[in-house]
Image (cartoon, rainbow, N blue to C red; front, side, top):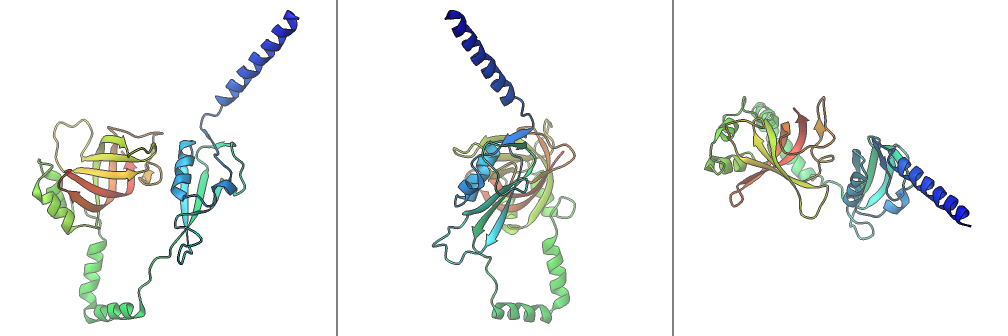
Length: 269
């Protein structure tokens, strides 16, 4: 009887060891969460976070601008999820962690200008077309230290609370800037595990001189918001990472001393 029990225990141990080996044999892979049908109707950002926590790195979102009132379907409600092109994927399946995950969700259509507003704009442009064309081109230009003296002055300040920072933020709100910087600090946003507040300083990490504002990306996801690119993208980024940043000016908070930016694209340097 003891011999039978010993054999039975040995079989269990071998089985558990086999399971352990299998669970550790998925390097470079990610396991799907709930199936596509379960994801339907959830908030799309929750689904994005769930796939990120499972290890997927190539997550994209697509809008269905089909909401009128939002009574029956809520803004941001998931329509479908596909993994590597499969909308009928099963839960707990292993895929390469870089396969494309597409999360399609419902939202309201963008507001269109009325015919009257369009006609007035066209009339105004006709009055002085050459002047307006020059102005439009200037507004689309990305601001750098080479083409904008105000931005060069802001990056050169030694006091992170210098008044010219707030003046620049008000003057150029909504404009796009481009500069070299690095991650000086990175912490989780609230209780989120995949969203962060990232402090960005001008220049290269480890330098001996410091200048410019305390820039911040607030409540961002590293995968879906920073739009990382470059020849050598690491698996994770953190404090000390050198970046080439393109971002939209949001606002300067005089109380916190933070200059808030909205990331457009982020190149690993």
